[in-house]
Image (cartoon, rainbow, N blue to C red; front, side):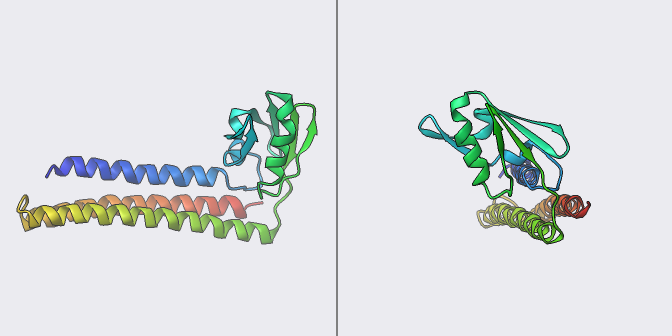
Length: 186
């Protein structure tokens, strides 16, 4: 058993989990315009569903407005419909190939809802990390059963792996707390 390879793989997978969480948080509205807000929207064009950033340029001229410049003006109605149907609570206004989105101020109720969604994303990240940890611990236990490592090495490896997960859990909690603060600030 190559413990260093297992540890490196574990660190990589937990880092990827945190990146996924950051990407999910980027698309969560905080009352400020963000180009990442529209990342999850897919537009039915050219006979396929494409991410919005593959059919248009998204920009933020100010912190309360998004502009979506559609490259092929014939796709503007499809992009507008996809934004309207996205559930983000945005009302697109189209002028030619440019779609303007004004960020309405968030109500207290909507802020609380978004905080719950942010918490759900953090919990999903923690569940993913627990699954990764369970797989790694299983590999270590199998190595003991196959007599590849001793029980002392098993304890040392398990403690080391647990430290990796503990530090990543702290990172997830910090991200969640920061996002909650962003959402609740006016």
